[in-house]
Amino acid sequence: MIKLGEGIVNHPEDVSVDGNGVLYTTTGDGWIKRMHPNGTWEDWQQGLLKVSEEGVTVLVSQFNGSQLRFANDVIEASDGSLYFTVSSTKFTPAEYYLDLVSGEPHGVLLKYDPSTNQTSLVLDGLYFANGVALSEDERFLVVCESWKFRCVKHFLKVSGRTDREIFIDNLPGGPDNVNLARDGSFWISIIKMDPKGIQALQSCKESTQLLEAYPELIQLLIPMGKQAAAAVVNVKADGRLNREISDPNATDISFVTSAQGHDNNLYLASINSDFIGKLPLRPL
Image 1: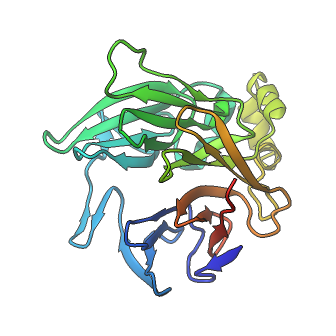
Image 2: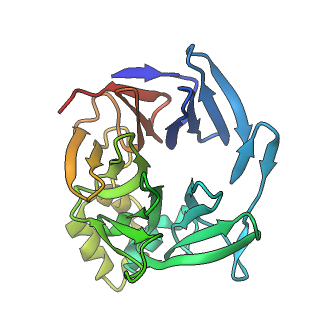
């Protein structure tokens, strides 16, 4: 695996590549950094929702009278609409473990309409809504539910359907970010977790007090250190698992949080690293 921008990017959480081959990543120091095709890096912008060469605009800061404290991922449709996840309407990012042990669905998917400047609810009752992606034909959205080890599908252009159905479940860990591939499939980064331990903690009435007394328990349930296993799956548009790529011993990279394919390479981001991984994809 090739390490891009080693020592330049600080704990990159997400990665994207545009049509011109320019790579973008969000980093722990608040920057959106980009790497040009010639390999040079640039501190491009700092910001929240809408970021362009002209500057930063905060589009949505609250919904139904409540502050958005845990907005996570966003995808733009061809009509300009923005679909974005809020992982938890009850807890902050620093309190993510409380959302986990509650065992309750506090996540939502929202839609921002730029023509009306209005935000509406698309889906609620999501178990830690994380990554979101549009299908190639924009008929449906895929939303990651990290605590349920699954992704759900929400149809946008087909009437007579329920608001959601299972896209893929029984994943080998909690899905983090999801990105559309050029062939219409999806790359999903996987957080390795201990499902039995999580279920046991959720069934414990004193789970919150237990974690406050022994905070190291969360690292046993969700290993996030530099030795944490890395995993990515590719799922076809019909929800069938296509391939899995993993680094179980974190030899090259650990705790991958995002994966994006471009020109027969897979670009990997990890909040543990100071680089973006570039992995050549072998044909199946």
